[in-house]
Length: 217
Image (cartoon, rainbow, N blue to C red):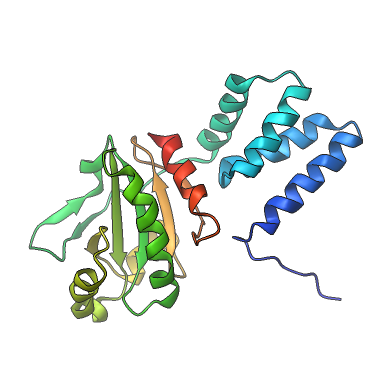
């Protein structure tokens, strides 16, 4: 029988991780349970995972400070510098350079106007971004299909989304960010390092994006 592959953004993954953690704890392998939870939470945080992580951490004597240090260590270990691009704006002749955004958290998405999954994800991104209006967060969207350039500004006007649309190509996205499918998303910290990637957001996990952004502010 073929192995069932669960959707990577389905909360059932949390259930399975927590269940495995519980089994390890009962078997006396508390450190193994803790380490698996830290890795999972560091990559895609949820409130459910944190509650379990906090509970298991207490069993090995870890307080909240140690827990947060362990999470940060995982993220620092996988962080990589974001390619310092300069791309044209659709709203004028100027260009935006990623280096100019140092000191801000950057939510970067690769998309194109005809991308159905991109359109489905945008409302959830916007709902989270609205919570950080007064914070140092910049929301960028790189269109990877130049042939669809004429549709970008009408799309922005009709939807009222707040991301800054940038001119890109599929070749640029793949060469410098490894993007082979859209939407593809990245969260870049204030030092210009990619901390979170390979995530999708829908109505079931908007909170995860909120936790990710909060951790970088």
